[in-house]
Length: 458
Image (cartoon, rainbow, N blue to C red):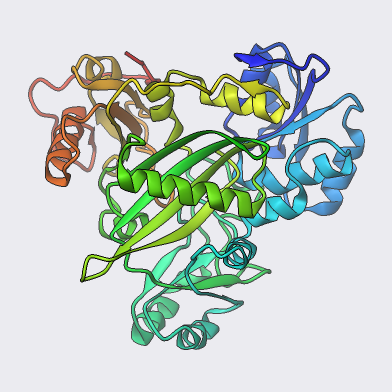
């Protein structure tokens, strides 16, 4: 980490469901690292990294279990950190119980409970969609009527990746979803990372209810990661999705998705970033990184209405690799520094590219038979990084909600117009040539390989 170090902060506690990048960053920087992990992964994690101390938890929301576990932790822990959506609140609880600096429980809930989030933002004068809290599918139609009728969006109070999120166009559409069992369906967990939390719980099965939100006809959806040290904004990284996330999830569930990191000189990117900064202040984000989503509605007469969507007290999972390349810094190391009360070197960063587009790859279903290796993809002039999470002979990873899981390609687009960008993305996706037992035969010249490929930056 390139930071101004406070040497008194030497023992960090990380709460982690499976992504190890944060605890790895602390260990590499010389910290004593203790990690809380779900009990089903304890032995694997201990074997993989004996230099860390591990504690197991069965469920992140079990208050009594968390209380007993906290009592077992070393008294020397002086930093509590996480980038895991499920762990934001338990991390805040441990922090608050030990009177350590960082996000409070109340502010953590404002970043993870969308019901509390929307109310806090609205109170601060930030425009958000009208919303109602319900506890069963039978209440959805009444909630929609209170907000002026359909269409509406149903979603969990806490969640990630648009899991169990659905637009409902009408009363008959609602009834069809009820009959189909949508409200009683538990989401799948292809990577085994969410079994210790509530993210996969069905809408009807949630003990705390779910949300019915007035649908906004979004023309463009922006994302922004905001880095803050207290009230000081160190960096904003704005970009836009190829289409609004909900629309993409509904219309192209089996194809690639992409998003573009934009220069701050872009008018709309700057406006979205400014709104995100206001929202992080209202939510009490404080020191750390907050991933925000901002919605733009464009009316028939050309007027623009900006809405704040949602925020999370973590980096955007598929977002930060592009801005690491854009600005030449290690995002996870910067986040680790901030959690430890240290100032990362984020000022005076200059963009290295005009823009960067990330393609999230979705594989056809079936067992993987061939694909183009990442190192070959990186030989293409515009490609900055490629990583594929595919293994010959193994099942292709299924997407998790709106999150592609087969891999990603980061490249510098030659044009930012929709048609030109679509064409460049389509050509790169075709060049990956993922073939499975349920897809077409591999074309001549495609390079089969085996093993799991990792990112190979240029």
